[in-house]
Image (cartoon, rainbow, N blue to C red; front, side):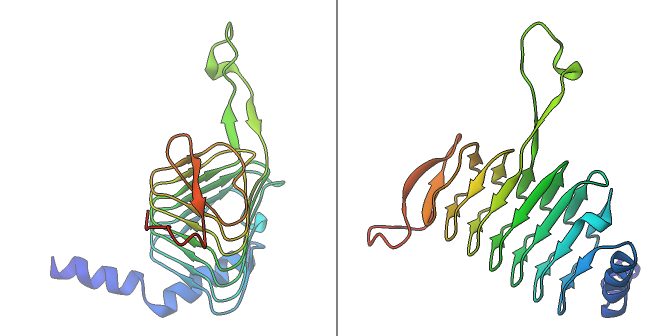
Length: 191
């Protein structure tokens, strides 16, 4: 047990974190300044399709997957990405600045077709850009699906499944996510 704790300390040392960022830059990723990348952050597929702005924290075990040479995943400045978050793009996912993604958030720009008469496994995926504005909070275990735009200042509640666009400053929750209220309402409560 003591040996394992020692390995965890070494695998998350500042030197190894800088080395991981250096390797991503060598593979074409656009990594800003003052970035923290936690232990076991994985960028697979096309690292050149990944960019992140300055002063962003990407916590442990985050999985970022620009799937092909045309895929783009961009994260703005001053963001915090929670542990075990999964971001997968076939085309494009854009996350603005000053966003907070809690642990276990899933963001995907593709979905399966569900036409009858053809087995689902044989159907083409539906792919549409996902755009998340600035100053957005996405709470734990929320799922953002293909084609969704989330406006500036919006809040997505825990366990919500967002299948439609979210207006600026809206607070949404549920499955599927619906508008509960807007930020700034004096009757707002924590989700």
